[in-house]
Length: 116
Image (tube, rainbow, N blue to C red; front, top):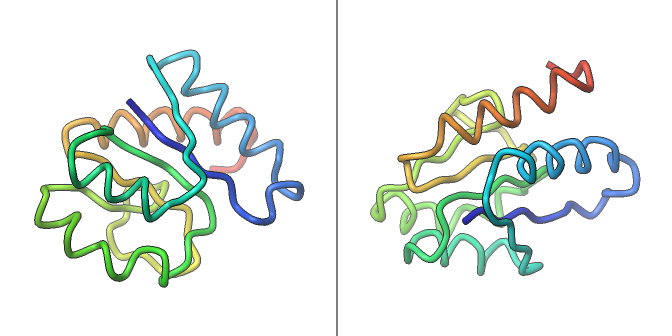
């Protein structure tokens, strides 16, 4: 199960968000949205979800829970797979097992919009 959140500036990048959602809806099984990235990250660390992607994440959203995620075996990167993240950034966090698959789906969505 995957989770996605929507950034504050979603009206400006709506075409990107819809491309991502469309790519996951056609290649995945289930997507949820809680509205809280902190809750989403805690669920990932707990094993309730398998991965998430989110655009324009701030350092304050990820700094405290990143240690918990790493201890739980999570993989954290930007959309291109780089683990040295500058903030704000578009991020992918997964249980580690499906990380590359999430990145591939996002890459495909980016190529369709000519954003890579």
